Every structure is written in C-alpha cells, then in structure tokens.
Image (cartoon, rainbow, N blue to C red; front, side):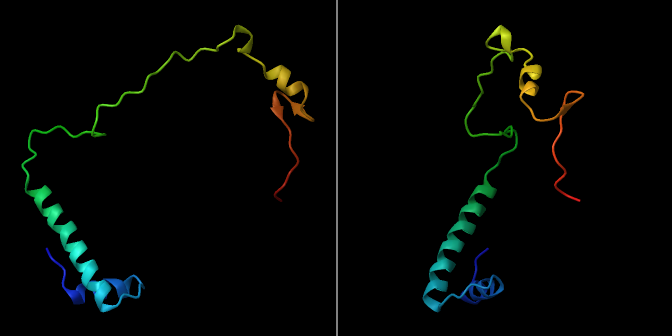
Length: 98
C-alpha cells in the first residue's frame, strides 16, 4: 500500500492539520516507508512462533508478603486512636456531596 500526495492532504484535512505541499511530500515518504516496513513484517512466516508479552524474558523478583517487623501486623487501633471520628473500625468523614 502506498499513499499519494492527495491521500496525505486528505488525511491532514480530516485530522484538521494544516499541511503545505512540501510537508505533504515529506509525510507521504515517511508514511510509505512505514507501510513498506509493515508489508515486510507481514511477509515473514511466523507459524510455529510462540507469541511473547515482551521481547526479552523478563521476570520480577518476588518476595514473600510478610511484615518486616513483628509489631507491624495490625496497627489499626493505633492509627484510629488519633482519628477525629471512628465508628465500628471505620473512619467517619463529613459529607461533601449532597
């Protein structure tokens, strides 16, 4: 697929982009180069190639989800002790939307 000068001008008009003739010629060449690359990539036989999520085999190092210090297991009571209003373990806030 290749674009003509008129195609580029039409696309620019649809996108509401002002493009003069010199710019349109440059964009035409760039877009036709991109379309050529896409055609080359589509011509490659990829049967039997497993799809990948990333170009490199990247793995996250995971650690056990455990508290670093034993006293940090449940500090809700300590946090709620300084809250202005608490009821049944929930923070009470003023109504801001009616």
